[in-house]
Structures are given as structure tokens and as C-alpha cells.
Length: 124
Image 1 (cartoon, helix red, strand yellow):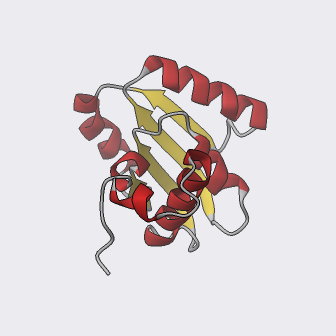
Image 2 (cartoon, rainbow, N blue to C red):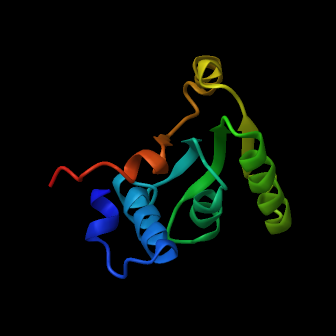
């Protein structure tokens, strides 16, 4: 993808960390962000990064993912970090998203999908 080819060093963990950093900047997560919705959170590493790092002002994350195994893994990660009160990860089908978003209307500050960012070229 474009983002991976343009990142140095080209190793996955470094590229993923850099992408999450860039996505946080693009979503303005350095400004007060009461509720961040993460669609397709995968293994949830980015959500812990945004909540734990003082650079970002994310108070709470609500994540939705279609994979039961990824959701279970991410929930264990959140539990080990002691962040269950700030990160709520749910397994849901994509057709459940409208209902989930309706419940968050007014509370949601930003919506991200880091997997989609892997394949998009910035508009600068």
C-alpha cells in the first residue's frame, strides 16, 4: 500500500506505530476527545496507545470489530492494562453499526478506522 511504501523503516511494527501516530494527528486526537469510535480495531493496540499516551486527549474508546478472536485478544490486552473503564471493545456485525452509532450520537468526538488508513493517500 502507499503508506507502507512511503514509511521508513519499512518493518511492520514501526510502520504501524507511525501510521497510528499520523491517524491520531489527522483525527485531532491531541485535542479533547471524550469518545473515540474505532471501527475494525483489529487487536486494539492503537486504542491503548491513544488512551495511555499523554500526547493524546482520548478519554474513552468504543471499538467495534467483526472478528470474535480479535475482539477477545484485544479485550485481554485492555484488561491487562487495567483500562476496562476507558476502552469498551465490542464484537458486532457491520450491519449493527447504525444502531451502535445512534446510541453514541452527541457523545462521539471522532471516528477512526486505522485499517482503512493503510490504503489511503493523504490529501496534501
